[in-house]
Image (cartoon, rainbow, N blue to C red; front, side, top):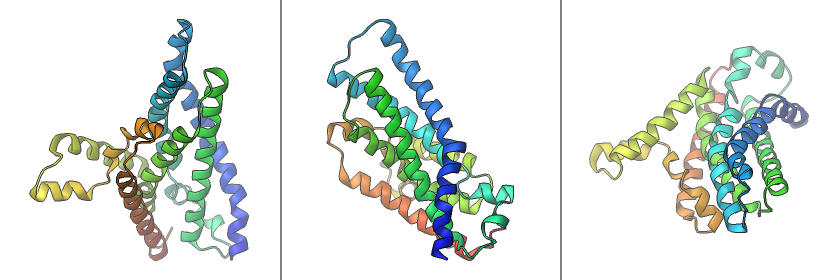
Length: 236
């Protein structure tokens, strides 16, 4: 059974590259060109500090859009399109297959961002890739567990994930630090509001580790819940 599962890694990486990776590269190039184009046209010189700040700005915008695209239908697409009949005709456990697919998609996501950061260093100004790569990975992993659970439950997961993300951020901006029932309900929502301000902090090495643990811990709980759903619920 394990050998059957490992054989799918090549297919999963290939599907990511073909169906999502190219789109992520185009998104990164489009947003990067929009921000950098006017600066290049005006021949603004880049220092180490300014290049890091500009890259952090680009990554903070690209990472969210790219994560939504990469995670779209991570489980539900096979159910909607009927691929599960072929995938699970062999002896492969459904939760293990999709856990592996999540890992393969994460690897593909990080590779895409490594390529985009490399292009920035080559065409704009050399930068240390560690901070931008860590932030990109954090965005994927923070959204990933929630997206995995939603995709395990619903066929049309992408609009639900976007809705959860928007509602969470709106509610935190309106009723943050509230006590009582409203505050309790707010704390049960995903802590996505922590992500936007963390790009610069990670770049500067001043990130609050407790916020990272809360983000990844919440996502991990959702991911495990998604695996339980896949184990107990008929897939078709």
